[in-house]
Image (tube, rainbow, N blue to C red; front, side, top):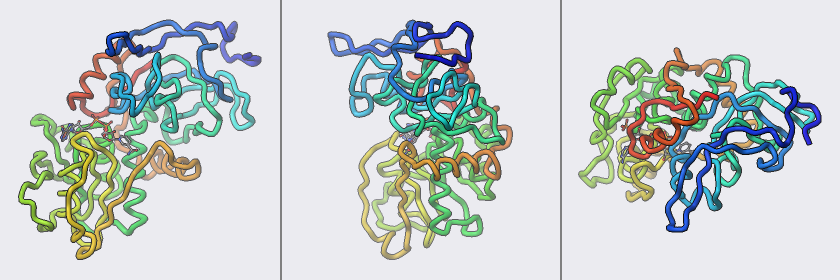
Length: 341
Ligand SMILES: NC(=O)c1ccc[n+]([C@@H]2O[C@H](COP(=O)([O-])OP(=O)(O)OC[C@H]3O[C@@H](n4cnc5c(N)ncnc54)[C@H](OP(=O)(O)O)[C@@H]3O)[C@@H](O)[C@H]2O)c1
């Protein structure tokens, strides 16, 4: 039971709006905005009144019935949410605290962010750092967190701006846009690879120094090594694009593999690793442990904070989330789509 509600009159019967994905008898999936009750939420120490929730590619897959992401329906997707603590059974949080939840199982097989309230284990909750507000936290969301985690890992392996530019693939997407902005803020030259003809102004504003067509990062020569044109890469595409990032990377550079919008396989030789000392770094943002998670959020809110961060968010209502899920699956969104409650 809620014994210390932040909202007067609120209890387990309090109703709120939620996106609900249902599996239909014919094997298709419906997506509707429905009314739920607090009692419908899973157990957890911290109840959060959401202010914002960010849309990610994975959410659109979950909402399409992708069983590799969400096994059981009805389900509310949404791997990112932030807002104020509405009730806490945790000593670490009190009512009204502004908090962020991204990753872990939120929106996967735990009822997610595309609803007005979430209830989660205290171990998933990050106190919002001082240097950003809740709106900015969700412009980052998992996308910004993943981009920052990629750079963090690259720098741990010795990457630095003096080595040369960093290639970012899928540059107008959520992770890609955030990577371009964070890298620029951290002092790197950025080569932004995109399939969108009209994206130059957006990418330049974020800090890209060079904008190239997707084909640039999709080598068809099948050569094991390419002339190096970048010193490191953050790849959101996978497949041959990831192979190209590795084959064309300068000596001792790092390539962060964080996405698979193009393909999930990797077909290449080991020569870039053995002859050029390239590091390929796996990025799994969802299960990042709490000390590193807090460190990444600290960087996102201080030295890596993207200039004019809010301007990269497109703020929509919960009702509009369904059409934006279709757009992100077609690779047609630019920057970050954020639900504002
Ligand atoms: N490892 C992690 O922890 C983690 C965290 C978050 C996301 N991810 C993954 O990262 C990827 C990107 O996620 P996101 O949320 O940023 O998605 P997104 O917003 O849809 O961005 C993906 C971008 O990739 C490009 N793209 C789309 N289809 C493509 C294709 N067939 N070939 C080449 N490029 C294509 C498009 O950018 P351009 O038009 O500019 O080329 C698109 O905007 C996804 O695979 C997601 O699952 C992983």
